[in-house]
Length: 369
Image (tube, rainbow, N blue to C red):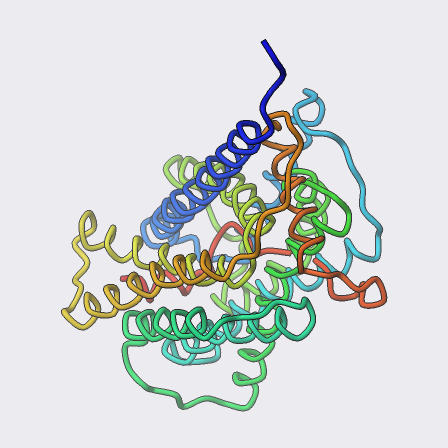
């Protein structure tokens, strides 16, 4: 009986990575869809309209869950440079706060259009600073996805906006795009797994958002979060939301570590489609023929993007002859991607770091009805 044949080992390693990729993506899509409905129930049924404070609680619970996992020896305790951690936290918090403020200051249509601009912004950053190239077929598929999602989410063209609203929307596009790029580059730069990166960033985001959240929510809802009275139903729903947020954040960091920010944005719109279909199937929401057409357009664009990206993919580097564990496979994937093309310039260390919170801004639920 000889040792493992290299070709067999490579196939096993590729299969392991593929299953881990599918698991991370399926976990992120399912938990992201579920949390939208749970948050909709919390805000509509129980009248909890404090989205920023809710996001802070999500990160707090996430930090506590990771702390217990570390104490149990399930996750390795790691650290990252303070400057990178603070940059990560600031960009992430600005993204969350400006998305909430953008929806408050602008029309829903302009808010949705601004969100769609995140994809071209990420394409620009990845091609200009991270050495990524996009084929004409990949770019065409991205345009198709954006067009389909626009048909679904932009209900009218009321674009009457103030200068302040436009500035806030622009900042939300930049910060949201950067935060998704930063998650991947920070994992590569410091050789951290998704769980290890999240163990550093979740506590920092929790305390910073807890400090500013009540004031932002006061502006948005004209009431203080401290005046809210919890019922048993509201408390149970809040606990479910926080538990789901842990899974959303972990799976989101895993996805952004494995896939590019562009791929995450493009395929992430599948969540929007699923939320709309779920509202139609289970909550009695109406979907017009125009929205169905937009969904079909977006889904066809996602399928096209997947095949076009596979064609344009660079050859995989050879792996070790043993089948790695899930965490080893994740780290090997990050290092391989960094070596292949996502070249990180140490002189540009400021461009490294995050991901969105485990909840969309409160007002987003308005657009999903």
